[in-house]
Length: 449
Image (tube, rainbow, N blue to C red; front, side):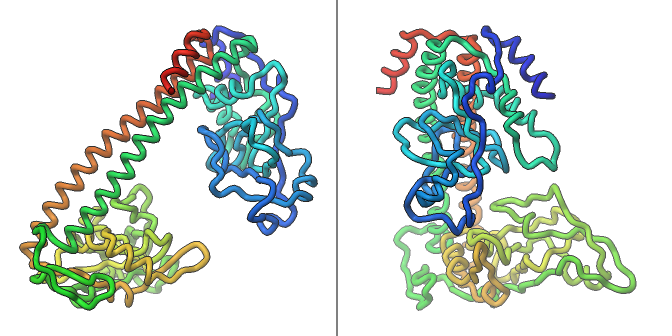
């Protein structure tokens, strides 16, 4: 649906007439890349806001870049003023918007952020809420057409239409939504904190069970191993290669002569945190003997070789999801000796803090990524209770993880409900479906005190 069609729908919903942003803006324009690019960034100076700093709930300044005063003056056309509305116009964060607070001081933006400077008849907070409303976002994305387009232009933004009540009513709406959204955002932040606490509890539970078992205050023995100094006295501690066969995979793009067969091929991107992403599976042609050598078997523990540090060694038990599937050379298929180690127990060990610490410390780092290898995977220390106890521990952890997931789903649904209510409230207020009075603003503000 086009931007004009979206605006027509908005016109039917709004009690006020619509007008184009450009008719009530003193400036619509983005910044530029500073001379020298990222090499011109400083540890202190004039803040240079980039797309990662612009969010719906305000400016995130944890990783803000700084530029020198002379560079700031060279970029005079994109110097910030209090009340400027900022909108991301390129990349994955297109449409995110916020405004420059009164107390912000000097600042500038790069080419990925557009400045919309409202005229005296348009309240900057009200405009921000209009752009963040569902129909505001719809018009933004309706302007962003075609996969080859990399961003939004000034003409596109200027033609976005918004309801335009009196300035006094805009102020009331903005004040009411400020107080209401603050309460909603506080509730959402609390829910996200609950998710963080839940995740920490999940990690602690896995670590405790795979390194201590279920018996509290059990007799422990020293191992002399730097990764796991103590284990229950009746457990063993072995290097992974002593209880597993580690199978390497195939390099993509290699050509073969003679008879070949087509087989599905699992890549690192398919092995995610706690699940497999199998929507896009590559097909490759290999000789039958090669395919037989690297075909995954049900029960193989998939361990990734490279990527971000938290992805190293990530363990997932392959359950034969795709018949005859091969695997990339960046994925190790770890095949446990059935009389020694159960695949699900090994997967929990790699997920535990023990596994994370081992691969983070032994992974080879490059600029942005890290990698391990078969030797380091094989040298990983693995606590080894009896098979019967492994089964008991797996059953316990499965039940606990399922319980955590159910609680997580409830909290995520609550966050979704609050987020949907926030959007609905903004829509009702800025279209006039819900009229705001001074009493409404006072009531909501008192609730936040």
